[in-house]
Image 1 (cartoon, rainbow, N blue to C red):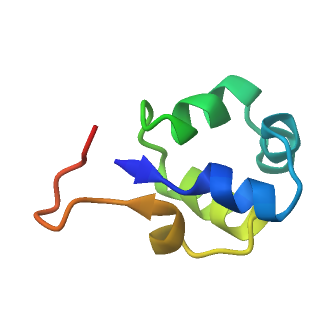
Image 2: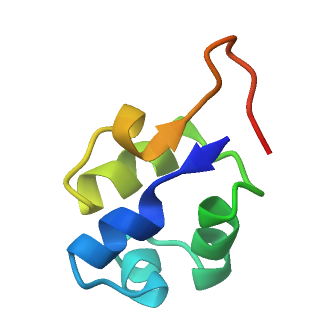
Length: 70
């Protein structure tokens, strides 16, 4: 899975720590999300999307066959 979280954070002039605080997780969780090393729960994906003014589909990108990419 790839994400566009870093790109959207930059648009909002938000640090990883800012986003983590806003969604109630540790900064390391945001690091892992951005690096594609962590698949979030639906609730976390939703919370991140809301915090960044985006949809889940805009932030989290899956391969067309439905598998995640590394």
